[in-house]
Amino acid sequence: MKLDENEKNNIQTVQKRLLKLLKTIHDCCIENDIQYSLHGGTLLGAVREKGFIPWDDDADISMNRSNYNKLVRLLSDENNKYGLYITHFNQVTQVVSRESADSWIDVFVYDYISGNHILQRIRIALLVFLSVCVKPRGALKIRKAVLKHSLFVRLGYDAVYFLSGLIPYDMRVKARERVAEHFLCGNRTLIHKSNDQLKGIVEVFPKKLMEEYVAIPFEDTALLAMRDYETVLITSYGKNYMEPVRYMDDSVRVHESIREYIRGSK
Image (cartoon, rainbow, N blue to C red; front, side, top):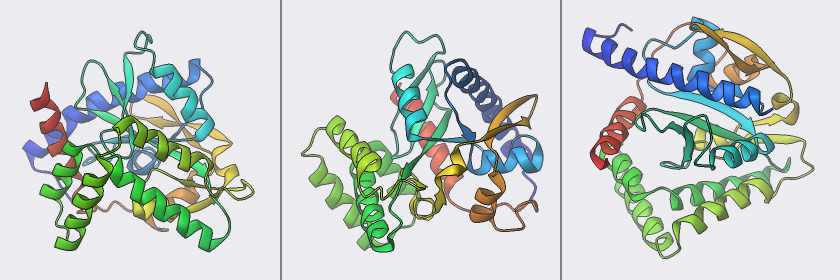
């Protein structure tokens, strides 16, 4: 599907900022022995396009919990030399540049999960509930305005947010992270993306998925990906993932609404 000229120019501007961010986070991880992988549409673009998918307006990476904790500690220092910091505008952690907060890299965290299907469902249900609890009010308003949820879902969001608002935000975030890292992990042989949307959080893989990495071309540089990236791409996009298809979901409108919100809050 082709982009019109205005859409193409807008996305190319965003992608230039995202490429700079990806190069910076890559250098940060390499210099500090932090393992990461390109993820989602960014991984698909690297494999299929050797760079960004033409209509992609965000960037995704993933890492296991131990590497994620190292990254958070490093970027929590306001004086870190990389000019990056961690934010939680949505339940997915974002890495943002101090130069431009309206472009970000989503960081998906692989945590251990039990092999028992009933325990998996309990863990996932609790994580989904806690994900709503940690959504800042701005993010919740954007999703309600842009996405066409049913009245029941919207009322559910409001009820959870109102009740969770009685608990300090930092405490809610810590509770979610603690559950993601320690609750119903089984014998620690299986992993899943504990901070993903519902479609992704239910995908379970062997832990070895996030233990070996390779460098792959991306635009004018090379970035890292899990060695067995084909397994993830097939799970997410099907066996025909090399055939370009523009998925007409609401993510672009959500992302643009978030950018407008961030610019307006400065």
